[in-house]
Image (tube, rainbow, N blue to C red; front, side):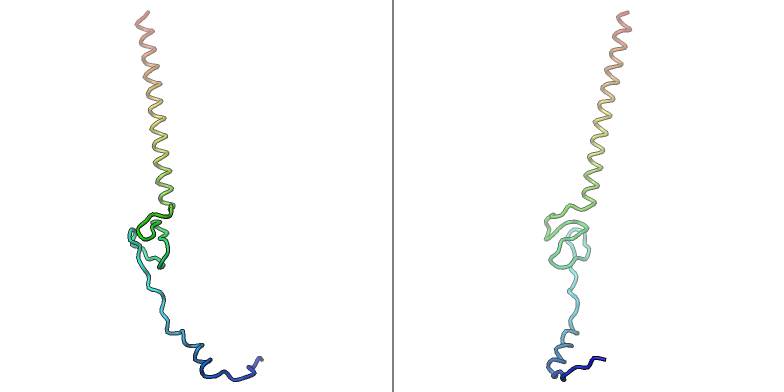
Length: 98
């Protein structure tokens, strides 16, 4: 069994226990999402740091993706209506000519 060679002085002994009275850092709160955040760190939920957007979050990416999909679908629908209306015009013009 290991045994210390020399006695620790009172000062060294007391230094070992000096930090037991420390508390945790107080949590700060994000200005936009009101979630608790570590001080001087970016909020991972909203992506803001000191009121400035600095990080694209997962929610931002999914919102952008859905907006893009809606736009593409609207374009497809518009093309379909245009081609259907032009096909309808063509059939009526041939029927009236005969």
